[in-house]
Each structure stands twice: as structure tokens, then as C-alpha cells.
Image (cartoon, rainbow, N blue to C red; front, side, top):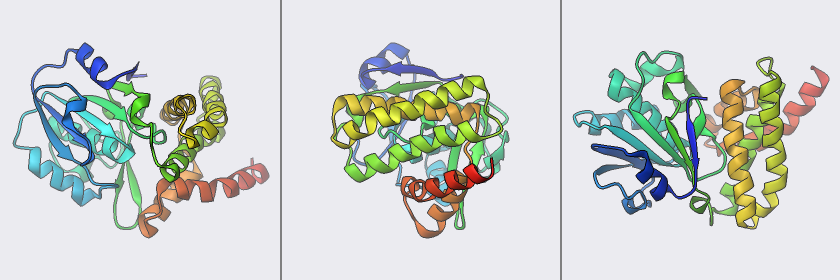
Length: 270
């Protein structure tokens, strides 16, 4: 796995990485820059589920500046947007050029990914999802695997119940779908089984906002991200990307609606 995973405080882990120079902080509008402890950061607020045009707009705002690294703190949309921006810094061009498989020529700028939900697993994946009018499309490249992932449970404490549920189901789907694809192998199976087990061990506690439940769900999300990087997502995600783009249905909710039917279909057509 290309990503080095660190557990614990964001501030303490960032100070230990020895990042030098000027950084770009991608985050939601509500996040304060002081959480990082980094002295020289340019803050870029990312909207929920940004479109391709939104990402183009972000790039236009920053492309004339020099950055040595990127820190992304947020949910899957923030992390995915940061991956694309970090790749644009070293490759140039247009974000649409990256859509598809292995269409990025050069490694991106150093990226530190810090998730604030337990669902996407984007902190360790080679994927970035881009929303267009008719569907969500994927950038797939080993070049956008974050260099570092920091798993700080404090950042998910207090997550609203609906977001807790939807993101957790997204993490479960990653492990279930990867387990059932033709790309699975014995190592991927072990990761998927551990991710599914963490989901059932942690969901109730996470819904009650207990720390032990949040810890299990952060692990579930991390394992799910590893699973889809080594294996692949399947029909649930393929369909939910269309449903989400056309009807603005939250990604986890779309997955929850589609998962039972997918399992019944798979049982009948192994």
C-alpha cells in the first residue's frame, strides 16, 4: 500500500511529518486552520459534493501559487478534490483529463489525508469521484494514493446520526462488494472480512456516539478503502453514482437502498 497510515492527533502527527514550505489546506468552511498547527497554510474551502466545474474553479483560484504539500481534512468529497488539485499541481491540464484509468502521468504533490467521516476510505484509495450532470465519474490512478493518512477519532465524535449511518453503510459496501468481485484474492478477502466484522462490532456504538464504536467504524472505513484499492467496488457503487448525480441522493443512502437487491441478485447469479 502506498499510503502510510498514522493514528492519533492530527496536530501531533503533522508535526512529526516534518512538512516544509507552504501548504494548501482543503477543508469544509467550518474547519479552523488552527487544528493543524502548521504555520504557513493557504485555506481552500470545499463545497459538499463539488462538481467538475467547481473543481475547475478551485484550480483557477490557486494555480498561480506555489505549494509544497496539500493537507485535506474532511469527508470523501474534500479528500477526492484535494487529490485532483494535488495532481494538477504537478501535471497541469484540466480536471476532466484525469477521468478514467491511469491518466495521470506524474506523481502529485505530497498529500496528507485526514478523514472526518467513516465511510469513503478515500484516505488510502487510488480513486477520486467527480460529479458531472448525469453521473459521477472516477479518476483512477496509483498516482493519487495519499502519501499519509491520519486517523483521528476525535474528528468524528459528534457526527450527526444520519451522516453516521450513511457513511458507515458506504464503508460496509466497499468491503462487501470487493469481497464478491472477480478481482478478489485471499489477501483482499482477509481485509474485507475484517472490515465487515468491524462494521457489525462498531455501528451501534457509533450511532450512540461512543468512542469505541467510532474507533471500530474508522477502522471499517480504512479497511474498506484498502479493499476497493486492491480489489474493486461493484454494482452497488456503479448504480449509486448514477442515482446520486441525477437525484442528489446522499451516496450512503443510495448504497443502503441498492445493497439488499444486489445481494439477492448475486445469490441467484454467483
